[in-house]
Image (cartoon, rainbow, N blue to C red):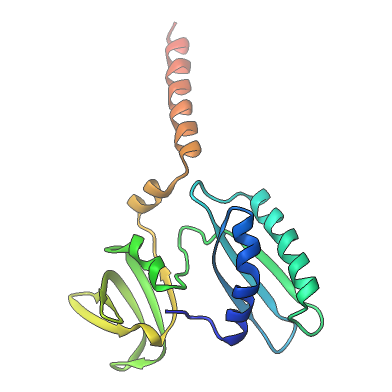
Length: 185
């Protein structure tokens, strides 16, 4: 699956080596308003999470590549961010980590009378995405997917938290108990 059009695929091919060289995965990209002043949204990821500084660094490097390659006529806007917890899924391989998780899938064309499906992702059946909505399983053609987005559950959010945030929370809990003990004396 590749939900990106021709121009987006060209940009992905152009930018992926630079992002990879910097130690990040180019999770995906979106090109908005390609006929007017375009906005290029680039999503980067890495194992221990993405910071604002990471996004700024990647943005500077990508800007350099875009200045040299000049894929846009006129001005454009570049946005670099993490995919976020409610991330878009751009490639078939990205779905694996989200099996049995809530998902929203929007198709390019109606399937069984609808384009939007909000349910639970239950893997693949050949080239079809298996999505359970209420008690009905739909086999949605992967080639027809316009957009797929993970809908995080509280359990998923807790599991996805960076270790530093979890350690900080533990530290705060310990500090709170020390404060409580001191206030009792």
